[in-house]
Amino acid sequence: MTTHTSDTIARTRSVTQNGLFHTAAGKNLVVPFVLITSLFLLWGFCNGMIDILNKHFQDTLGINKEQSGLVQAANYLAYFVMAIPAGLLAKRFGYKGGIVVGLLLIACGAFWFIPATNIGTYWAFLLGLFVIAAGMTCLETIANPYATVLGSPETGPTRINIAQTMNGLGWILGPMVGGYFVFSGDKATRSNSSLSTPYVGIGLFVALLLIIFALSKIPELHVEDSNRRPSDQERLRPTGVQFAAIAVALGAVCGVLYFFIVPVMKLLWAVFYMNEAFLPAVQYSLLVIAYFSAFVLVARNWNLFRRKHFTLGVGAQFLYVAAQTGIFSFCVNYVLENDPGVTRLQASKWLGMIGFGLFMIGRLCGSAIISQFRPNRVLALYAATNIVLVAITMAGGKIGLVAMFASFFFMSIGFPTIFALGIRGLGEHTKFASSLIVMSIVGGAIAPPFMGHIADRHSMRTGFAVPLVCFIFVACYGLAWQRLYNQDSHGLAALMVPGNSVLVEVD
Image 1: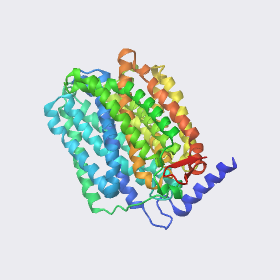
Image 2: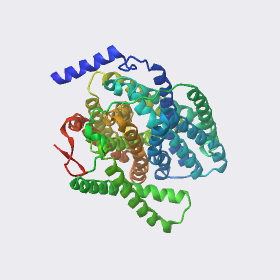
Image 3: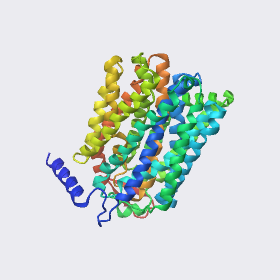
Image 4: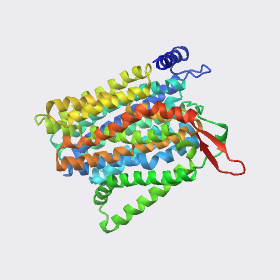
C-alpha cells in the first residue's frame, strides 16, 4: 500500500511540475502532440468505416458472415506485412518521413475506391482496404510511440490515452458518416456505387494533412533505456537452453496461428479465383518461412525479446485487438439478431453513437484514471470486467445487447495501455519494438472470420466466445506486468564469459 501511494504521488508530482507535454529540460511539445493526434482521428475514422462493410457486402455481394470477415482480414493483414517496414522507415527517415509515407499510402487506397466501385468485385474493395491499412500501419507504428515520448516517461500512458481519445472520436464518426452513404436508400442494399463518396472524402482530407505535415517541424525524440547495461552495447545471444525454448515456443505459436489462418487463406483463395491445387503447398511453405523468419528475428534481437514485459505485451496486444475487432465487426449483426425490429441503418448508428460513444468516453475516463493509478492494474480490472460482460453477451437478448455495448467502454484503454506498457524503458529498441507491437494487430485479421464461422454454424452470440478467451489473457498480463518489468529492470545481468565471445545471462 505504501509503495502504491508513493508511486501515485510521484506520478502526480511529475504531471504538475513538468506537465504532460514538457521534457525534463522544459521544452514545450504541445504543437507536435496536437499534430500527431490528428493522425489518431484519421485512422479511427477509417477503422470505423470498415466495421459497417461486413453487413453491407453480405447484402450486395451475397456472401456469408465468414466471408465478410475478410474485410477485417485484409485490413489487419496489412498491419502484419507492413509493420516492420514501417519501423525501418521510421528508423531511416525519422518520424516525419514515416508519417508522409503513411499518408501517401492512405490517399492512394482511398482514391482507388473510384475504380473499385466500377470493377464491382470483392477483391477490388479488399485491395483498397489493404493499401489504406498499409498506410495506417506506418502512422500507428510512429504515432503511438511518439505520443509516449512527448514528455516524461511516467506520463506516457496518460498521453497515449489522450491521443487515443481522438481515435475514439474517429471510430464514432466512421460508422455514422459511412452508414449515411452506404445504408441510405433502397439502392444501397443492392449496389456498391455509394462507397466511393466517403473514401474520396478521406483521400482529400489526407491530402490536406500531407501539406500540413510537410510544412511542419516534427522533432526527433529519443527515450532513455531504463534497462540498459554496459554489456547491452554488445548483441546478446541466447544460450543453448534458450535457443531450445525459443524453438518450442515459436513452434507452438505457429501451430496455433496456422489453425486460425488456414480458413482465412481458403477464403482469400476463393475470392481471387486461384487454383485450389496449389493452396496446401502455399500454406505449408508460408508456415515454414514464418517459423524460421521468426526464429532468426528473435535470436538476432535477444536484447529486446529477453524482456518479458515486452514479449508478453506483443501477445496481449495480439489477443486484445482480436477481441476488439471481433466485437466491433459483428456488432451490427449481433444487434439485428437480437432485436429484429432494428434496421441496418439504425444498427450502424447504434454502433457509432452508443458503441463508439462509450468507447471514446472510456478513453477520456481512462486517461484520468491511469494518471492516478498504476496502468497495469487498471488494464487488469477493465479486462476482467469485459470477461464478465462478454459472458453475459453470449446469453443474448436485451441484457446481452446492454452488456455488449458496455464492453466498448471497458475495451477503450486496452490498446494504448498495452502499447505503453510493452515499450516502457526500451530505449534504442523503441521504434523496432513498436513495429512488432503494431504487427501484432494482425490478431484482428483472425478473429472476425473465426467468429463468423462459428456464427454461421451456431449463432452470433456463440461467436463471442472468441473475445472472451482473449480478455482472459489480457487480464493476466495486466496483473503480472509489474513483476515482469521489475525482473527485466533488476533481475538479469548480462555478463561476458572470459575467453568467449558469447554473452550469457545469469540471475
